[in-house]
Image (cartoon, rainbow, N blue to C red; front, side, top):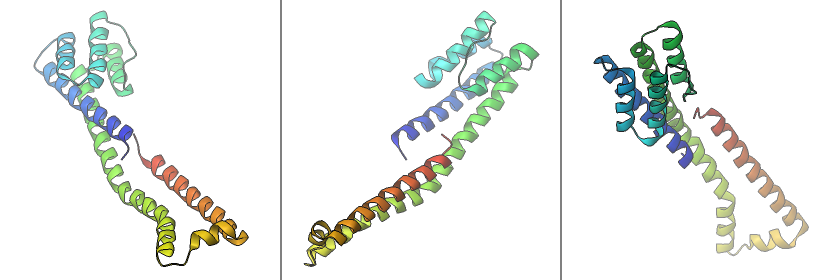
Amino acid sequence: MKLRQRRQLAELEDLAEAVTGLVADLATGAHPVTAAEQAAQDAPACAAESLRLIATASRLGGDLEINPPQLRQAWHLTARHGVPLVATLTAVAQDLSHQATFTRAVQARLAGPQITAALLATLPAAALALGEATGAHPLTTLATTPLGQTTLILGALLTSTGLTWTTHLTHRVVPT
């Protein structure tokens, strides 16, 4: 899993946990501004910004661009239609948690194909090294003969195409 994907997944999990904390504070009867500010203090930086925006929107009584969209929609439902904030934020927390769980499961299932693709991409280099070690001199053949040069170019092209295609397929599936 790439560093960017890990960071996005961690931010999603942190936000789900922060929204759950906000819901817990609201369920005890805290005012939305106080609950959001308290949850923002306890949350990691990536989630704290969204909670501060909720506190600001609650304090000013207006609509702000809150991210992620689930929080913005929950706020709009509460502000415009009177749906209880605890109910909408509970649903948002569950949605974020399920989204993180699903993302983690998909990434775990893709680890095998990604490792297989990387292993298959290294096989030509390993075969060349083995050929050189046994004295067959495949690099000399690939570099000096027209058929070898054509084979080398074709092999490099097919290997890079396979890696590009595998990367494309696996990154299309990951929901982060």
